[in-house]
Image (cartoon, rainbow, N blue to C red; front, side, top):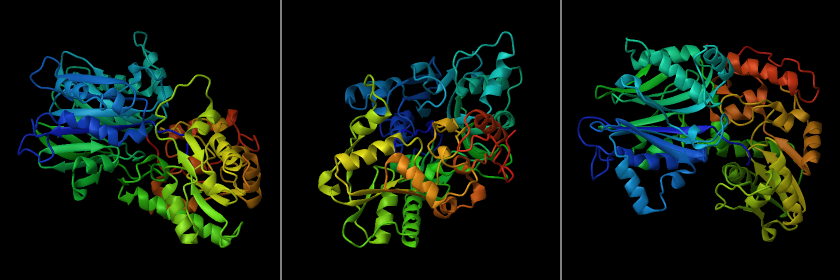
Length: 533
């Protein structure tokens, strides 16, 4: 799938006092900041716009030192130039570090918005840096509250700066609050998804997950080495044993203070709202999130697609002309599984250009980029009936281009689209860049709560130029992830938001960007999963 992006990813690492870890750098165990680019590279899928890190260096004038820039991890840290990369790591050596990769759903794409954010202060506990993964649904209210003070000013249009000011306010005054107290107060102020890695000039650190656990956060400890990252694959590939990797529980933080590491709860977390998109699209297929494998989830999604196809076949599956083709790359596991279950060949009829990187070609639009990104293979597709498997359809621009390319350049006989996700009918206010109903494809045909019928699916198929179109049912998502619906955030497919601010934003959105009936009516037939105040 194209044209859908996550907000960012975070990481942290600390070499604590004690026996040297086998995973620490051999040259100097207290220079574990050298591992940060590697951690960030493993979560590069979560953001390619900017990258950076802040290191803790006791004994130096700059106790905290931040390096960040616009670009991929490889570009920012000069990983393709060994001498330059080594010089950079020598300059920013330290026994602890936090890091960040960014995609912008809030704020511009200049270097000033790259993270971590660092705030200098003469008092060590007030000198801090942090990285933020998520999106604050009550950003507008928080921003207005700050700017209501005559002497306050915000330089950036981003919730990360708002968060920095709130943390600064919590640290102000003569009394030094504990890190747990800071987090407890944050939980009272913030609504939305907010995973945070934080470090101050005392060398104190925390990695915290919001009380609903909307975004994933994993950590591992072996001997004296602690590390955390948005996804487990980063920790596994650094060398941590699988049994050492755990999830930070929602409403909890891993704290490093006075040479000790503790996992502590900072707010009650009676409900969960894990973003289901993490499993079906965003996360690395090799990751395990909240004890559920991303790969096995996508495999199960494919089996669900196969079950639907068998129960109501649209085209023959045993005539030798039908093949399954995945849209690279995230739909591949579902496509393979669907094809295996149906006993239909799964072939790579679309080849993705993996070397485009970030492009800024003048005048390109979404359609141009889609044509550049995928190349159809007529040797595979010509004369075939294609079951094109996609993980989701958001705006439909890319899908229209793909179908056109499959017919015109691939000479496919028929194109039948199968989507391993229900229709996206509502925006996301928790860190995915689909913030208005007007951006979405499905609401032109379907409202949240309305049953998806074969007639509606055929209307949608006609709109994108497909012979047929089928989505997975909402129930298939929870079955595939193997978590109860009550533990998942599925707001984008059912219109039910897990926080008060999210619900308010949606009510505002449908009043101006209504869907099929343009009724602007409320669609919440059941209570919210949880409320963060």
